[in-house]
Length: 245
Length: 224
Image 1: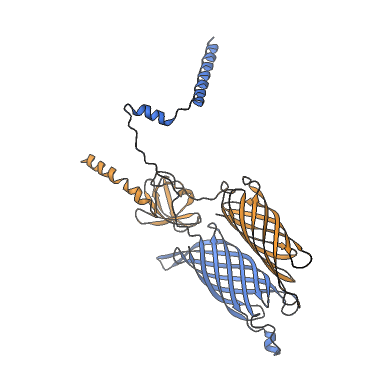
Image 2: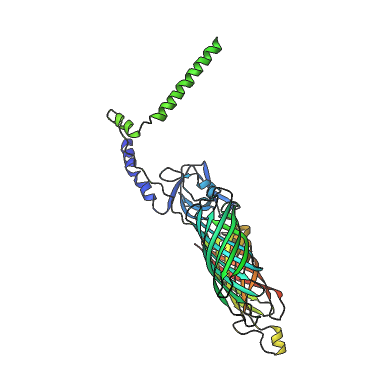
């Protein structure tokens, strides 16, 4: 009888993991226990614990917290440090995207906001970058320049070359081109709005702060290709924060 | 005598170890050979199905998008209804990045009303439109209780951002400071109460003047 049961179990067993490969991720607790918090934060109280060997279903993730449902339909939020110690049906530790110092330099996507000075005017810039390889990234930037006498908007595309992706503070060189629109203040009389092509070359740095945060600083030299006799040059420096994902 | 014997023995062991290592380096035995050699006799070759380990698709909900409405006091130009949209990315449980866009119609200044002179601004110049990007800090995370059986996760947060305001015909550099409270009605649905101060310089009356434009809004956002 026992042998028959075992045979049946063995026959059924492979079906389990195959079915579990579909979207609701089920993992087995491998630590002595995992703690279920009432919310996705370290301060939220622990209402349940799930002991080793039991299974939980992973419902969703918010920042570093995972909402899970245990075998008795109790739900709670588990921290990433405990989730990495759970096992998938394949018997390996749950592979989780967990940004850290090691991933800095190997990350693909980056978003950030910088503020600074563009030829004496305030500038706010947002950038997004996509790394083709650890050294080279394509970057899009949009900036708003707000000065006492004129405003401007800049949109551009460029390349950023990271000299040493393995360093904590990475020097970088940028080059790019875009469009700059300069609009004089309404209080100034009879100065036309101008839209010109521009190009820049710059140096900067990216420094790893913690988790997925980056401190970024840049100095760029712009050349504005005007339709007048002389091109204009502008200096810009910016400092800000970014994060990678 | 005994010590010398021990040294001899150790030297012999080391030499043997070295040889074994060398042999291992020079003629690596391939797995196939071993299996073939052993398979002929009695050992059963196990049929192991290699399973490709892919990172599981866990639904991440770090983005938050929503709309808000409330009232905005445009300095010197009355209190007005403001509408806006908000996009946030939750970087960690403590910090988030957010982008705001809002629009309001500024009213009539006391000067215009009292003096009866020509209006200072045209209708299009009276539009108060702003955008801002910045960071927020969940300074007081917690729970709120409704009756004895319901608890909702909540947070009080502080925000700081910079952006631009279009008002009186020009774009103006704006610093936006704020504080808000968020209550999560569902895991994916949140209600907010926000107070913000948009600080910018306005030169409607000739000279530049720093203005504080306070705003109080309620909003509904969804996580995705």
